[in-house]
Length: 283
Image (tube, rainbow, N blue to C red):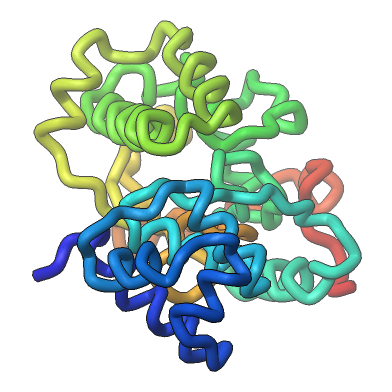
């Protein structure tokens, strides 16, 4: 199987063909030489990051295709942050609201690529209000901060420690890979929590990350187990996990059959369910 670096010649030939350019024409437009283009397409030479950016600009490649080109040469793709609340993403917000509504009464949140909460449903507010009654839930803006809180049974069980270790490892490796300032700041903040196990790196190294994991919470003095299931919303293709908007829909499901999550939503009536990120309407 070819390594990502060996894929660059095929990408370069592909984009030349898309724009009906021969090697000499592309070289002229890039201020390079036909011999250099030939060596790149034969895999004899490796392109510099500057050269890849020149190709992307000259051929007017979008964020997706620029990222694929960088990956094919063994470089970390660039990532441009987007504003979830910008007018051009009204269709995405509407889709997220419909998803949250459809998943009631299961606690569900929508978050961005670094865990910032963007939208939650009524069940999410009711559930976490019941699990962490002393927590100012409206002030929680990042899902990971909620996972690392000292409150509740989550501070005492190995299952929560495993979840924290996996989150930290994912963030650590992303920081090593692309030196994201945002993720580096989040990692530093989470590592400062007293709930972080001292051997989190060793714990995470022994675990394989999955889209779902089980953990216990305390409700009415009794520990109950739940599945946390995550689904990604993003672009299609090799750059799916680094293209923006890259959202995650996180939903909780009870492991015990017959447990009615709906009762949490009904506790205290509708007026008790409020949060600044609670979805409203479908605009």
